[in-house]
Length: 186
Image (tube, rainbow, N blue to C red; front, side):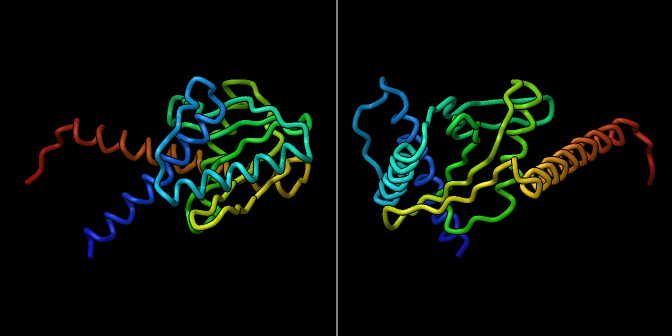
């Protein structure tokens, strides 16, 4: 059972990696060589393409960053996309998961914290773009930070993420300090 679960997770990770690589190649002309994709990754990529073409047909869209690695003292990661859409800057996370939950917003909050704090880029909104792996379709979970409820929610996500990160850091630091004290005992 564990092997089966591990195999499923590995396959899902490969689908996500292939889809992300293909989306990145879409924006990098030097990487436009044909890519052999798993069927699910191809559906996910075509789902992204459907979303991108739609957004471009109704708005002025300019990609700013793709697969951009960003770090700070305590954490880091690689954000999927940063777009200017009708003069507003949106961070976008592509997901090939079957379910979208609020914990994905914590990841976006961490990126927003670093983009605004270290790169001095003001973020106007966030989108989780769930890409179908079985058809050419997508779901868009969007936050517009002009809406006070959306802005407050993202601030709460940022605070929750920072608290969890600092808690983990200090837990590890305190354990290391305790072990280095050599207090003895029986």
